[in-house]
Amino acid sequence: MAELVERDDSVVAGLLAKLKNPDTPLPAKYRILFSLRGIAGPAAHAAMLEGLKDPSALFRHEVAYCLGQRQDPAAVATLKQILKDDAEHPMVRHEAGEALGAIGTEECLVTVREHVQDPCQEVAHTCQLALQRIEYFKAAEAAHQAAAAADPNATESRYYSVDPTPAAPASTPLPQLRQSLLNEGEAIFERYRAMFALRNRGGSEAVEALGASFAAQSALLKHEVAYVLGQMQDAHAVATLKTVLEDERENPMVRHEAAEALGAIADTQCIELLRKYASHAEPIVADSCIVALDMLDFEQSGSFSYADTGAAAGGEAAAVQPAAA
Ligand SMILES: [Fe+2]
Ligand SMILES: [Fe+2]
Image (tube, rainbow, N blue to C red; front, top):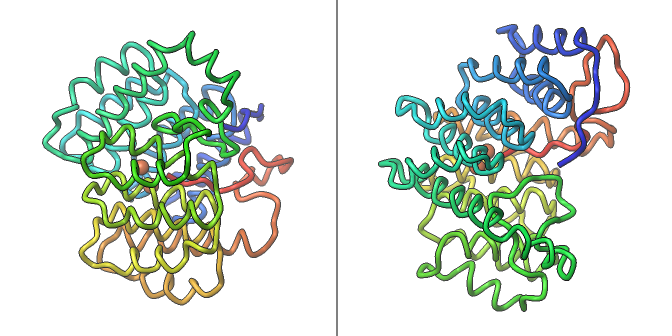
């Protein structure tokens, strides 16, 4: 992820005040959150925790995601609480589990292990992945360093995100990645690895393979595929993502990522569709479209910064690109 920047506590206090103001619209809160995520120190961290009190489940899931991306062990206690809370929205619990996997301390390992059989399937799958991620990096630390030297794709990508699994080796032939991703009999961890390798590969053939996986059974897999298609910002994915957003039988978590991916790709032909679904009865879908329209606006504007950097100090952006979960 991007380096954290230093900001005066007064800037953070200003952002927090806006965040807590019930009149602040959701897209503005997103911009504030992305700024906070990039600011170092306990004040920004505490301000993000305030965001977890927001009435929007979509916003709370985004806060949990951002806490994971910061990889700050100070967030572990709060993330544990969210994961254990059956009354919390599954999407928020999912992000909490994933964030614990990203932070990866021993305490995180113990917690995600407790939820690998969670009655909520998305949460259970997330914790299985998180557990494997932690074990993968723990057990293979030395080997991983060596592998990274030979294959940079194994540890890093040009995308500024901490991924829930490592990518499959960059040398894996594309048809093999495609087959792994689409194979319902394959372990979800391996399918995720193939997905991230396809993202890193890029190009229309990779986009096509990723798009084909929307026929998969796992909502978790599909939501992550939609997310990576947004990261790729490849217009070849637009038609498929539109179909996903429009599918009333699809899990809202998947439709949410499809909407935000469309916002990130910022093809103007999506505006009408996003506007239509911005008043959908399912708040996760509607709110995602509202945020997506703002992202699309940002991409179209050619502005330097998506984040709200705090009016008092201005200065350069802490987080330049929107990279929602
Ligand atoms: Fe998300
Ligand atoms: Fe997610």
